Length: 195
Image 1 (cartoon, helix red, strand yellow):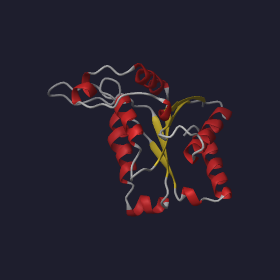
Image 2 (tube, one colour):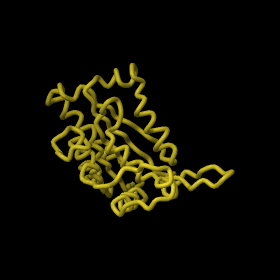
Image 3 (cartoon, one colour):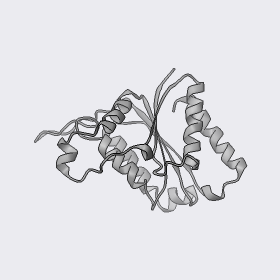
Image 4 (tube, one colour):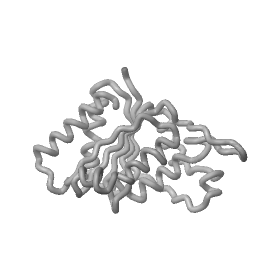
């Protein structure tokens, strides 16, 4: 079954030579080869302001570039988010992008006094791909993958996105060419599956 896939490249450095770009490209190539439709957002290429007030978050008008991103997100059945682990979490630029895109009225309903919110992105699934310098096992077990869990539960899950799967790639600076190639092949296969 053909799927509509949105790839969000969350590396703040626009130099596409990073491993995260290669992983996302491999996923994209596999998806296209399998007949899925693919759109891409490279957050490093976007110029948008950071949100600074609750009022702007709740009631402000998103910039045109953010409205375009919301259109891509609304179109997608499945979302791939790829980023490097920086200071134990996602880079600030990606977090700022998600704050802009996932506003009330788009990702969740605007809450009226005495009512709860509606998750407006139900029916979409996601895969999170994180690269890191530490061993992935250390991040997952010693550090409890706290930032990954926060993204899954407090951001994507809060909007209704499920299921959410993840791939963690650790010790990226020391990875052998053979191991790197196996990672790329794995991502290509995941892209073919549309998951």
